[in-house]
Image (cartoon, rainbow, N blue to C red):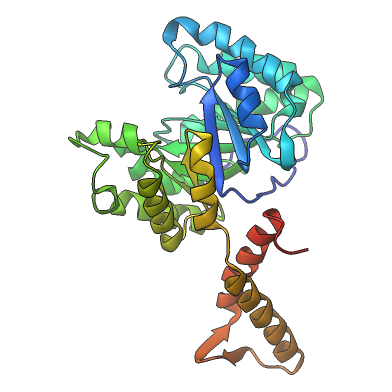
Length: 310
């Protein structure tokens, strides 16, 4: 069931999200650095990166940052609220969006367990938009799946609000919820099932899927392996906790020159074949039909965002 809307709903666009860089919401300096980085999306964090004693102060700092800090390269501007079961969530939504909602593209909601969690925040956002004259439905939502309950309900969660832009896998909290002894080693094998569950639910709902963080932020070789694996599975991007991780992430999720050339050739050939009434073509030794076009179109979209094609 979709959440009730206040006024006409706008379509939430889905920009390319190869990288989502999170930084502590209590540090104006770190937020300014993140906003100037190469990340496709920057998330000012009011949740895990902020001590309990600093929650209220950090909220004010995030408002200051979103109101004054310039974001380079047209990146997505986002902030992460505290979970709905905490005493800070509603103020994180209301206070920030009332103050600087026009400068927010996405609200990131952590530890989502049920679709009702999403609906609750959706309704708060709708009320703020109505009260402040913001475009109804214009601010998107991204949700973190990082508990067993969230994974069990991920299909319903993925359809809980028309604001939803992506599902994000939160490996650290998920591992803690399950009691995994060490989630840093052999993560590809340990978490293949939840990642594919999340990816499948996201695709079925037309959402982006963002893979989890590599916590060993100084181990760039590990980061590169994790990013390549996620890209191979079909994820759209990866969560980052340090700017040094961005080049490796972008390398994994950005098409190569050969892939760009292939995408252009396939789309051009298919367009010509369609005019002749043909629903499938042969490219090299492959049979290509309409289903393949989505993959190639996405590659070109990513390439455009990276400035590799016009």
